[in-house]
Length: 335
View 1 (cartoon, rainbow, N blue to C red):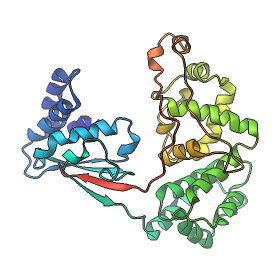
View 2: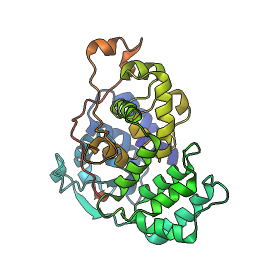
View 3: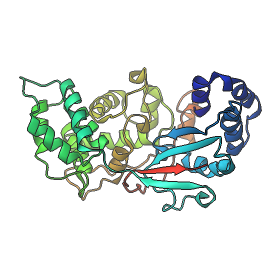
View 4: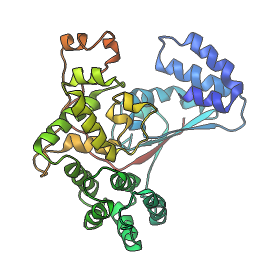
């Protein structure tokens, strides 16, 4: 992906990228960095270093290996530097090999109230309000305060209000949200927003049981699957899968890939990581929900029966212990 962007912006680097494609098969990640990134950029003979920006690094499952490999470029700061956003401080988290990388870290502060307010003013206009019961200036002020400067909270509010088949009209959902006294920065404001949305979308214990099964399988997925394969793999009948997918669309903060209605995508492709961590961490201590999502485990026999191309069904057998929510940190490796 990085090499593709380099080639798109700087066509003069394409010959070196094509050369890397011929020479890098089954070689180390360090060699890939050398051939796909460093050498194409060196070929441009630029007087200033190039800056490569990578957002949400911790949402990439191979981010640890990538960060460790950056040590290979320590001596090339005149050619390329990286700006990486990550919710974990790489130094404080003691990432493997981090001591070998030249890195500076900066904490990201909250987004200003002015920016959050402008976001609400723009996107509240897109909400399908009923009977002209729209958000008031006081509502916008309260939403801005409750957001705590966290963009994902603001975007989730808009997604929930915009869900066209919600049982409650948007103005009643809005009243419930602005009636909250929990700011995102205090206690569990973001978790409360998720909890209220899920309890509204999945009323009964049976609804929440199907939600647990669906999320358990979709979080484990590493590649999109046709609905029939997903149904066989998860044990959820296709009509129930469709219902859960439709309801969960109210909490999607990422644009679905083209043709997403024809495939079941990994949860990480559709939902913010904070939502995935929330549903993994939810326990019986937080009524009315009892999600406690766990990853399904499948035997080799079950995988072999999942279709003519079982290699497409890639699952991540991760620990059932959910990671803790952390504030975002901007990591700037000066490599």
